[in-house]
Length: 458
Image (cartoon, rainbow, N blue to C red; front, side):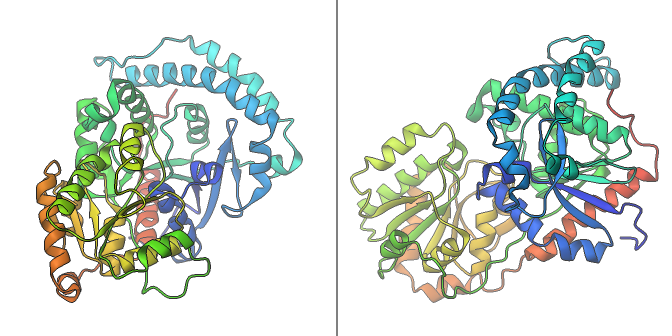
């Protein structure tokens, strides 16, 4: 990368992580990027500023614990405003995205409601006037974008209501770099359904129409994104879609400041423990995991299965099966409140970590387990092969018998043998990954500044 940097400010959008406080998957990515953003900004010669969006405006944060914006975002007045403007803004945004898409691709229809352009600004003007009455601390933190500023979006949020905000920032000269974690709602519609696919299509269209460059978390994610972009006939150049691999920071386990009592009680014995980490949701393929565990027990396995992850979506049937299982509370456990420190301890205690997903964009827990030196059993999918080929023991995603075979083999062998196979696994740290990802964002933005990019959305 050239040492000459045109952009001087990178705004890192962490709205979802800040407002919801979750610490799974994408939110852990956002937290890690923020943790290393100061040193990365110093290396790149730019200011990196965390921001959140509330009611159609961006505001600066000191850090994710900063209460100044949250106390207003959670106020009765603003929660009420959000509920009332959300539906209106989404409908107007979808119509505006559809109009811009038709301008760029007049021969390809994009489903969406129509709207009269003049009505859009007329209906949104009252929202902007309301913003003028926000408390002084909010107004003092409001962001005004300038030419060359970068808006980087690594957080989750398949929303449309920020379309007008981002379009306005583009008109002020800001460059827009989204970070794509996956396009699974489009590649695996059988999991999430037609409605989720329609909403994701509208969101992806919005992101591509605005983007001055895109960063993906894996080569597999990039390939599937480009396939969907081509299918939707969206305007983007392949060389403007880059890859920035996620990192890991786990180190040899030391003392824990606040041990999770129940987790430590369950994992303190010498019984082999198999660990599964991730949100409880359909693509994690947890029914196959449970089937495999039952095969393993029926064939003489003596270990325990520990699931760590918050409740997600479309998972009520699995959770009912889990908590009513005859081994639940004995050799089968689920924890939904484990922090990173205790998770690191759990990785260290595990005989192996199991990842049975049907599909993933990346696979952060897999990297964390391998980086910790813990053996990994994973479904044979492209994203996992990209990370762990040569280090991971793979099984067909819908074959619980093969999973049980591997669990039994790992239980029977001496732990040092299975761990020696992954002793030479190397992966970027979060410091290195943050430098790579944000460096790519700066490079893409600067390239956009030096060329005549696509017309901003109208």
